[in-house]
Image 1: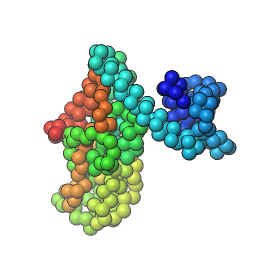
Image 2: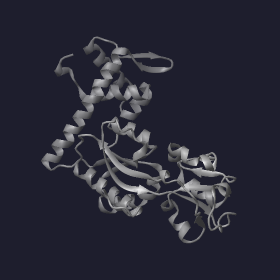
Image 3: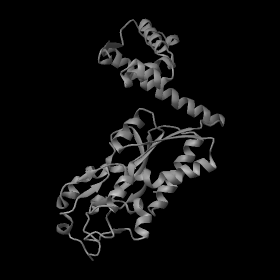
Image 4: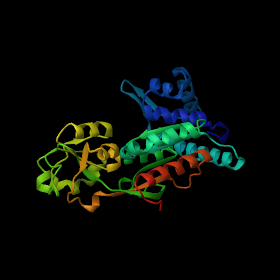
Length: 303
């Protein structure tokens, strides 16, 4: 295949097909017809002279040659996207599409103000927010499907090609409803807490050693609204940043237990982007805004 046969659009088609494992789903994601996608893949295979995908009843799978092709194609697409953004930044133009990844706990705290500020101040910017666990966000960042992510620094793979900037430290508490049997204890010991179900977001699984004296987590869920409701309507002990329940703590519906939590259960929050990545002005604006909102929420100055 000569350089003149390199078509970034077709490379993108192949990469999406490999991700979706289905011509139907890939065509829907690309917003093209299935026949157009099929022709695009056949054109690449004809130019290369090798079969890139095997098709069977279970789906579409890259061949050995296909996987080699896809690895290089993904790299080329990342470089092309970065080049496009750099040229736009140099020319004063702005790519007004921002793709952000947030950890679940941070999303519950930051997103309402983030959305309000963006819709009121920068309605021309198209903002896409993905809420996932830190490892899942990292995978999306490395695949260049996100511009930057904000999550627990401790749960990110430090060997990945990313640049990290710490912006806050999250301190967690044990929260219970006002009528909980432990609510009026001056100090609740681990033995006092152990009989009650403990609930948390999935980030706590990365710190499981800190929970050994409390027993196992009874419920793990990243829907913090549901966890908030469960804490208010059961004897569960909710392990969470108090910022997740600011109003309920202020009006007395929830109380924070005075309990011996290991310091290791606190964690740093960082913004991560691909190493060497150049962001456009809208991306930089959203990154600064998220940094400010996280820092203000946790009363911590950006590092």
